[in-house]
Amino acid sequence: MTETNLKRPRGTWRRRILIFLIGAILLVLLVRTGVDLWAGRRINVEVARLEQKYGSLDKGTLKVPPVPDGDNRARALRAAAALISGQSEVQSSAYRFLAQPGPVPVPPDLRAFVEANRGALKLAHEARARRESNWEVDYSNNLNHPPLWDIRTLSYLISVAARMDLEAGWPDEAATGIASGLALSASLRQESMLLAQLIRIAVASQHFQAVQRLVTDTEPSTAALEELARWLAENRAPDPMHVGLLGELKHFNDALARADHERGYSPWLMDSGLWSGPFAQFARPLVRLFRLRYLEQFGQLLDVQTGPRPRPDLPVLPESMSISSRLNSMVGISGMKRAMDSGEMFSGQLAVTELAVALRRHRLDHGQYPDVLTALVPAYLPNVP
Image 1 (cartoon, helix red, strand yellow):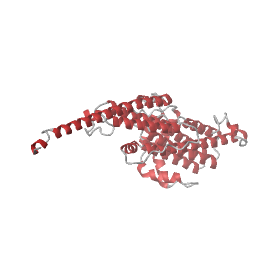
Image 2 (cartoon, helix red, strand yellow; image 1 turned 180 degrees about the horizontal axis):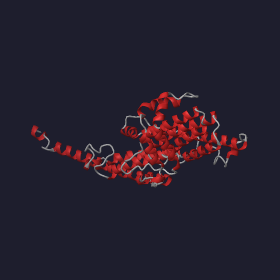
Image 3 (cartoon, one colour; image 1 turned 90 degrees about the vertical axis):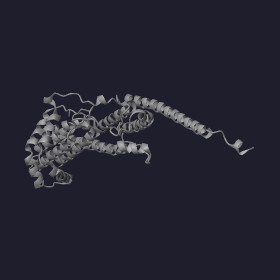
Image 4 (cartoon, helix red, strand yellow; image 1 turned 30 degrees about the horizontal axis):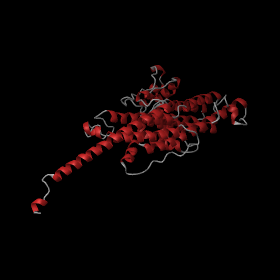
């Protein structure tokens, strides 16, 4: 054969490369379509399971029922928090003081802080007369959130004022202040933001400790103890972590659902211009896979949170550098475990505090403590914690 006969026809390699590329593209599209359909069906199954167990995941269900202005405790507390002056200077000082064990004198700077904010304190006490709360958050647009930093400061103000009353030998006045602090924490109990529920836990825990100090070191009256028992009961339900976790699930599931169904929207790339048009449609299986993983893991957390006690170990999430793990870190799945530990602490502290108040009330009514805790039911407690 001559050298000319050994040469391949012109264009053969190009045709082979083109056929290979077309085949690869068709294979990618086939895999993409299969993953998209599979993940979509799995999402529907998981959403149905969660809704059967925990109610609708529609973000619209987060709206708190309206409360008339004159009955809304949250409005009065928002106004009280807005009145506080000098809060930035005393945050750390109040935290350190209230964390100290034993009867420590109230330092001068905190005394001055209380005296300068008697108006805010009076308004917070008056808010207890309002039996309903709605912080009027617009959850559809994430607007008008509670001023959580100011709420913490108001809690510090109430706590320090109560300590000043204890120091002066006025247990009933101190009990009134502590009741206002418990009313403040209870005002957040329907708010579906996880951060709001963590603030609720922090505020309530601060005042649980104050109640325990009150009944240990002083002799409050029957009326003062009944008032405390009433506000402790209001803090009992709903469970803060159930409200917070479910709210977090609804918020982020809504964002992922919009990324799934609306071209041009992404919870991470909204303003970048990268998530739009054909690219958004092609990459949709990635969003669906992440949404599926998110729903499954959040479902596990909710199942554990609402399950029997003692609580089993929480599911272990794999630690890796994968995209899925990075996204889990972005939405804070691992941080939810720490939040749930705070919820367990809240429940334990509330139970102990309610028990302490019930025992003291029984002693005042009968002259002695009961032989068994079941004697406190139902007059002083709905059940033994």
